[in-house]
Length: 260
Image (tube, rainbow, N blue to C red):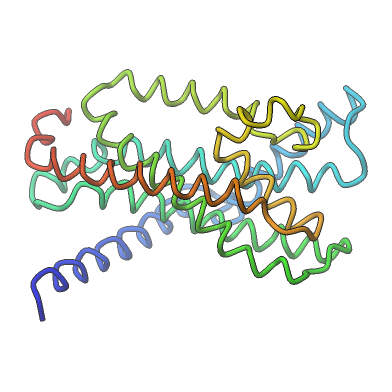
């Protein structure tokens, strides 16, 4: 068997077991365990629903699920990227003893967040079916939407993990950027509310098209916004390739920049 295939297989096993250990460790740190994965977006949804629907008199009967789908999608994106951003520094003790590809560490963080997202999504879909949103043929497009968001997350997480290792202020900048994007990604409002002339700028933020696509399928029984999804996936693939090249380029030199 070629050495490249053997190395790839070994790295896959490392990623799988590290991700599994990460999921178990997070569940042990909280009294509510896995239930906290669902409770977090639910609490955020309740607070935002009260603020927008009751205080500001916005939203309708389905606004709770509208918010929950948007928040669940967003929290996967933000949580995975920000956790992956510090993954290299957090694993200094491993890096000192093993010469592993640096992209493995943000990948493990992303997979831990992805597992939590799937748990929450399963409960959300079940809740939608209970209140009358029956699955249609458009549900067959859900794996493609999941794949597009996962590609987007990796395209941000991999280079960000390297950049944060070299520049401490990059983490502060990343956190602030996500805070701004939170309010302009369509979490609180439908895409139909965006003026036609402004939609080019709105869709320049790829997570906005992903949130819209999830809502189309889960809430409206409509197909995803394929042009926006595919354009975003293409851009994400290019950025991810650059991020992997960056990891390879700094593979030997990054250790001296990682603070103990």
